Length: 406
Image (tube, rainbow, N blue to C red; front, side, top):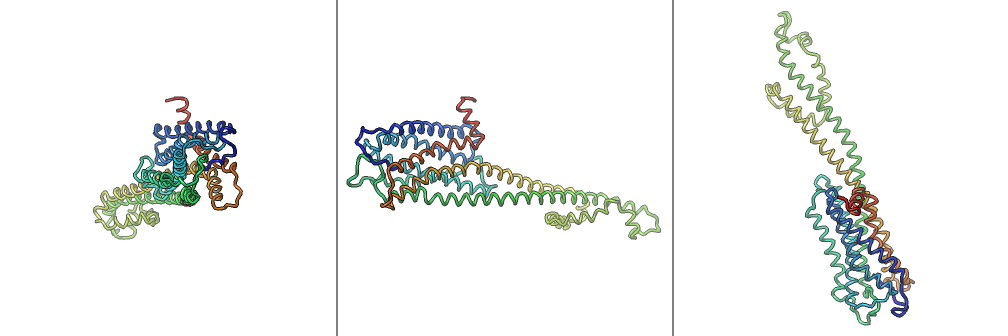
C-alpha cells in the first residue's frame, strides 16, 4: 500500500468520501467472509476439500478488513496524512503485503488442488481434509509471511524518512514483493487452469466413448454366458437322444448330429462373434484350459458371474468417473470467476506501483495510486458475492444464517 502524499497540513482537508466508501466496505468484507467461514464449518454438504481453501482465502480477506483497512481509511480520511507512529506504519505495511500475498497464493493453491483432482480423480478425496491440502494451505501462509518479513526487520527504517507518510520506502522491495506476490503466481495459476480445462475436455470425450464400448462389451458378455449355459445343458441331453436312435444310424453320422442338435446349438456362430471381444476372449482362454468335467458342471455359471462382475466393476468405475467429472465441472464454474475478478482488481495496483518505481519519468499522480489501491481492496468484498451468485449451496446457507433458520 502506498498512501497519497499530503498536499495540505494535517486537519485542514478531510476526505469524507473515504469514510462513505470505506466504512461500508469494511463491514461488507467482514460480514461476507464470516458467512463464508460459517457456511463451510456448519453445513455438512459444504465440507469439501476445495472449500477449506476457500476458508483460507476468506480468512485472509477478513484479516485485511480488520487489521489493514481501518487504518487505511483513517489515513485517506486525513488526505493521506499519517499521524500515528512509524512502528504502526511498518506493522500495517507488513500485514498488507502478507495478506495480499496470501490471497493470491491461496488462489494458486486452489488451482494446484484442482489440477490434482482432474489428473488423478479416483485417488482424490473430496470429503476429507488430507495432509496434502493442509501442507498447501500452510505453505501459502508461510510463504506470505516470508515475503513480508523484511519490513519487520527494519527495511522501512531508512534515514530521512517522512513520518507523515506511510508507504514502502525501499523501491527494490516494491519490485521484489510484486514479483513474489503477483507476477510469478499468476502465470502459474493461469497455466494450471489451462491444463485443467484441457484435461476436462479430453476426459469428457473419453468418457462418452468408453460408455459406448462398455455397453457393447456388457451385451457381448451376457450373450456369451447365456450361450455357454445353453451348451452346458444340451451336452448331457444330446447323448441320451443319440443312444435312443435306431441302429441303422451311427451316433457319429452327420444326420444323427444334425437331428439331435437342438435349435440353440445353431447359435454357436453368434457366440463366436460375441467372443471376439478382447475381454471375453481372455476369459474364454482361461476357461478352455480347465478340465471338461468342470466346464460341464458350474463352469458356465462361474464364468458368467466372473464376467458380470468385471462388467459391473467397469461400469462402477466409469460411473464414478462421470460423477467426478460432474463435480469438477461444477466447481470450475465458480473458481475461474474468482480468479478473473482477482486479476481485474489487483493487476492495475501492481502494474502502477512497479511502473512508478522503474519509470521515474512517468507521471503517476497520487489520485491514480489511491484509486488502484481502493480497487484492490474491493476484491475482498466481491468473493462472497461470487459464491452466492454462482453456487446455490452457499446461497441457501447464507440465507439460512442471515434469517437465523435451523
